[in-house]
Image (cartoon, rainbow, N blue to C red):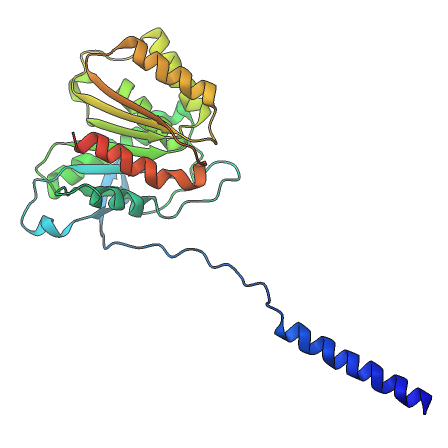
Length: 263
C-alpha cells in the first residue's frame, strides 16, 4: 500500500510538471524584418566588352517626366563578420521619397556581387559604373545630374571617384559616402596630402558620415584634411552618428540625399 501511494505521488508530480511546461512561454524564433520592395526595371549594358546587368527604379512621375537626376548605388557584400545588408537599394529609394516634391532614378547592379573591394582595384569598380551611366543616359533620362552613393568599403570607392575622376570628363557631381573602409580612407587622406589628383574640378558635393563602428581618429583626420584645403570646387558636409554600422546607413543615405538635393 505504501508503495502504491509513492507511485501515485510520482505520477501526480510528473503530470503537474508537464502541465506547467506547456503553459510556460516558449522562445520564439525571430523572423528577419520584412523589406519594403519597389518595382524596378532590369537592363543590360556593356562594360569593357562584358555584358553586365543593372536595375533601375523609375518613380511614378517618370511616365510624364524623363528629366530626372540619377542616383547610382555601389553595393557589394560586407567585409568581415558584418551582417549583409540586403536593402540598400530600397533605403536609397526611401531617402529620395523623404524629400518633398523630388523624384529621381535609383540605379545599381542587379546582382549583389561577392566582391571584397580594395583601393588598388578602384579603376575596375569605377569603369563599371561609368559605363552604366552612359547606358542610362542614352535610354532613361535627359538629366545630366548624377550622384554616386555607397557604404563601407564601397564608400571608399565613392570618395576616390570624387578625387580621381578626370576633370575634363567627370561623370558624377554628387557623392554620398558613409562608414568608409579604413584602407580607402587612408588612401584618400594620402591623395589629399600629396595633392595627387586631377584639378580644374567644379561644382561637386560630398556628404561624408561615419558611425561608432568606425575609426574615430582616422575619420576625423579625413574630415579635417578636407576642411583645411577649402577646395573652391567642393561643398562638403560631415556627420558623426551615435550608432553602429549595421543600422545607420538608412539615416546616412537620407541625410546625404537631403544635403545634395534639398539646398
